[in-house]
Structure formats: C-alpha cells, structure tokens
Image 1 (tube, rainbow, N blue to C red):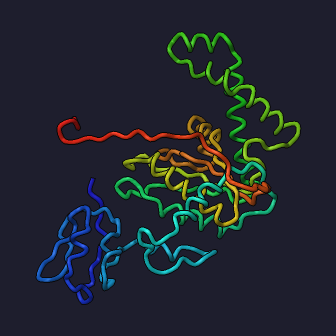
Image 2: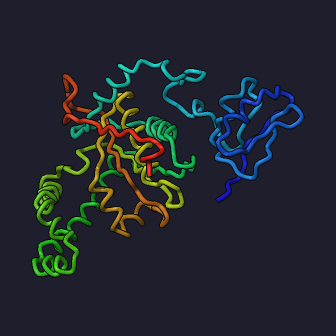
Image 3: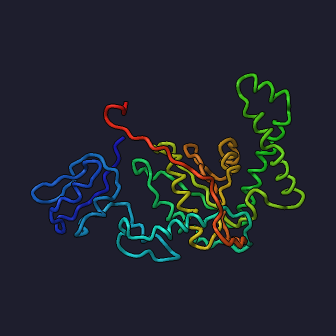
Length: 308
C-alpha cells in the first residue's frame, strides 16, 4: 500500500551531500544535478532524512518535532547518540518501575496525561504506521464509570460460567475456554464484584484517579506490537514523572468481547484496545527493586548452509 509523501526539500539549503539519499529506507530520494529530490512514489515518512540533514533543508508536512509536544517539561535540543546515555540509570529506571495497586486520591493533571500520550508516540511502529490511538479517562469519576461497565461484563460472564452443563457441552465441542475461566477466575471476579457493590472497594483499578486506553487500528502492519511498545513508553515515563501505573488486563478482555462497553467509550469498529493503564500518585513506599526469575538465553549460530 502506497502512502502519501510528506518530504519537502528546500533547494536553497540543500548542499547535495547525499546523506538523506543514503539513509532513506524506501528509495524515496535521489540526487539530481547536485541536489536531493523526491523521485519515489511512496514513503515511510520516518523522518530519517530530516534527522540526518546537516543543513536542516528537509521538513515533513503534517508532522511536528517530538520535542515540541510537551507541556510539563522541556526536552533537550539535539539528538542523543547511541552510548551517550548512562545505561545504569536506564536499567535502574526499568527495574524500579512497579505495578501500583495503591493510589492516593490526588488527581493527575490533564497536561501530564497528554504528555504521556506524546511520549508514547516516540515508540517504534511497524512500517512506521503510527496507527495507535489513545483514550483518556482523566478523572476518578470517569474511571469508576468505565470500571462499572467492565464489572457488568464479568457479572454476565460469571453467570454463564456457573452453568455446569454449558461448560461441559462447550468442552465437548472443543471449546474449553469457559471451563478454564470458571476454574481460574470465577471466584476472584466474584470477590471483586462483591467488594465493589458492598464495600465500594475498587479491586479492578485500585482507586486510580486516571487511566489511558491504548488501541491500534487494524490496518496497521503490527497493531498489537505497536500498541504495546507505546504502552511501555507510558509505564516508564509515568514512573519518571512521579506516577504509579498498572496494566488492567481484565479491562482489555472486556473491551474485546463487550460491544456495549466499546460503544460507551466511542471506540471505532476497526480499533482494538491492547492495554488499559491505571495511573495516579503512588501510595507505596518501596525501598528497593523487586526480583525476577533467572533467564538463560538460547544461543543459535547459523550460516548460509544451515539457515534453511
């Protein structure tokens, strides 16, 4: 599928160095009479040409520099080259970010939520589609309203799961999902519903005052991967901004199956939500990073004779 070309070259600034031509992954540019010109009929709009140009001769229409998007902080100018950032600090940030299940009642400013969305869009995406979308639940009332819809879906699911003949029939038909759900999740969901209805205790969003839903259009080449990469940017950035975060998998599952819930948040038919992120100020006084299971990577060496 061909995509529109947004590259514009200022001939008066172009020195004809050829850097943009060499780095273009889609053969969109060539050199003609000592100047870079657009000769291809397709482009990824990746901006590699813009980023490499020494004279700032290249712009992309309908695009804006990443650093101009932020409201709550200023991103330094220039490019952070490989090796120019301390990997120990990056690893420390990654290890220190934890799933938060105890939030204060302090609200998250809208500007912070919008900055988190802009940070999310720094993630890579397949063929640079950038087909992700972000739905904000900016206050506790909105989160509770959405949570009520999620719990309503699971109430109906639990009622079905309690019908033993139905579970048995579906299992005989090669559809054991309802039986597995009943064994693994029914009791936990019942506890959550009871806590919500009788104690007004939120075991789903843990009292979070805000949330971001990350979705992606299905015409993207890698919609799930794109959305999850963007989500991880949000998780790390939220920690750096003093916020706690938690991925709410039950909400993702409800949105995948409940048309009414999708309509309630005005989710287009061609979008799938891959992550629901609860956000707020953490009320968890951790003292150190947690632990992880040991992992041993597989090492496979291949050459042309045994590759296929």
